[in-house]
Image (cartoon, rainbow, N blue to C red; front, side, top):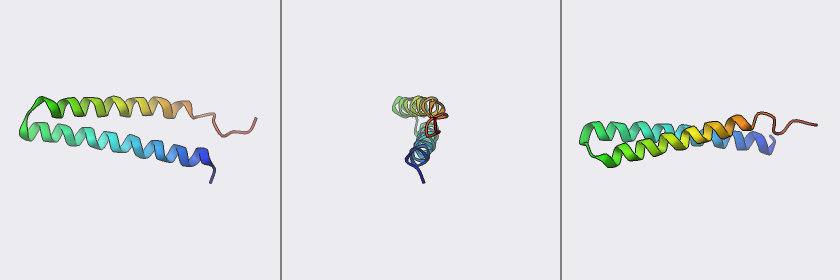
Length: 65
C-alpha cells in the first residue's frame, strides 16, 4: 500500500468522525438544549466540509508522471 492511499484512508476516517460528532452534538442539543452543542455541531460540520474539499484535491496525487 502506498503512502497516499493510507493518507486518503485517514482523511476519510476523519471526515466520518466529524460528521458523526456533528450529528451527536445535534442530538444532544435536541435533548438538553443549549447553544454550545449547536456551536460544536457547526464547527464539526465545517471541518468535515474542509476535509472533503481537501480530499478532492488528492485526486491526481500518487500517479506516475
